[in-house]
Image (cartoon, rainbow, N blue to C red; front, side):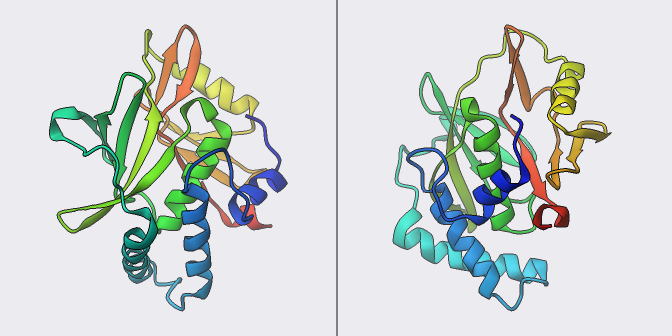
Length: 211
């Protein structure tokens, strides 16, 4: 999991694809360019509304979700951030309206960081859908079976070894990378035979990331 700031900056600020086969980096590049050209970037809510409108247009052109229809019969669970659906024996689908992020760019940055740190549970971005006029990202992820209760002290030790300092409760900060890592409770980190699987992560970049 250890990574240098230069590597992380290349992932977020570079144009190269990270991982294999997904449109995730293409969408992130679009959002990054949109943020750079928008005059409203400092007015976050207004900017996110504009960003969403731009994504709706992009979805129609390139990233409309056209995969397996998502059925309420396949619903598994719902958290504050996203809904989870059964896809097949090995995968789940997750829908996310980006409510934990000030911008959609922040959400896609978080996905890219997750995929680099945790390839065993990497997200594959499948596209966008609109549900009751709300834009949602649809991602696919490996289904992880937990066979034991997650020991949060082991999570803390693992993160501390990799430079993440506990701020409070289940929230962490890496001062070297300028990275916040939050909400790591035992439903977002699963354990199977002593191996930790980070399945739902929330990363935020801080100003220190860009220095």
